[in-house]
Image (cartoon, rainbow, N blue to C red; front, top):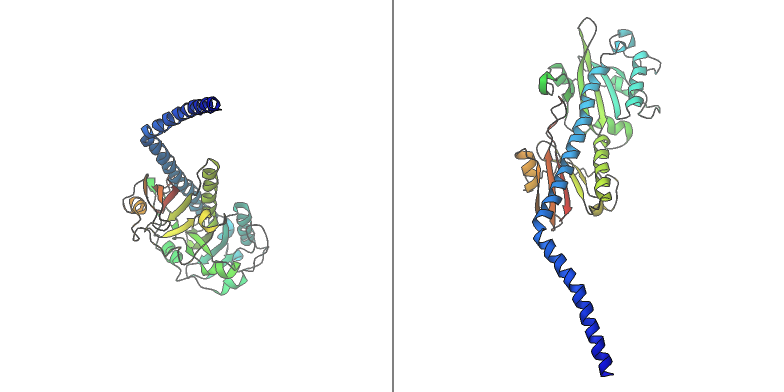
Length: 325
């Protein structure tokens, strides 16, 4: 019996030795390469932030040009098409076609130089009827996009790229009343001139902010698919205010949750978030490891400030992508 126990002990010792040696070696290798592995992870998450920023800019670049192109439609220059709400009016037909063809707009308005509505779409992005007749009794003379377009206060890009007013993302009451939601959108507006070069008015496109949110959601899916667990993506405006805070793990849903007490209200630069300051204030792109202010965990954060796309200068937005380190 004693011999058997002695033999069993020797076998256990051998098994432990052979099991521990590789483990010790593995731990040693991991410790030796910890710095390099950390750099790899930080580089990947920095690339993710940069990718989101660039994708958003490319999409908004297209919206920048759309509004100018729509205003070139001859139907917009013909007074016979103005102030006629019917869907059979050529100008309204064109607007409805743009709505369904592009699928990203929620409202299109052509207003004269006094801010009075000349035409508005009567169909939504899926082609369903939209009751917009009431807009003909409204005035947009005091709307910032109308004033800026008439004053030619355009967002100016590289190589002389200009001609469009881009309003900061915000909650448009017009959309809120029309669709029964919060109306979060980005407005693109441009002057409309007829063939003789005379100013007709201003065309405005209200772009649903979900265009931006879907880009963030898609990035999150890709990060999750490659094993990045607990990721959160935050989009900031040019001042550091939160435009989107996408954190499915914390909120318990993959749907976008718009918190009006946070969107446009919470400023992460003023809150002292180091990554936000690096991107927004310093205009840098990169990554870092820091303590998450709300979750109280160590987090790897990639950050990137918008640099525009093609000749489009961008809105100075910044993207933060964070994951538990």
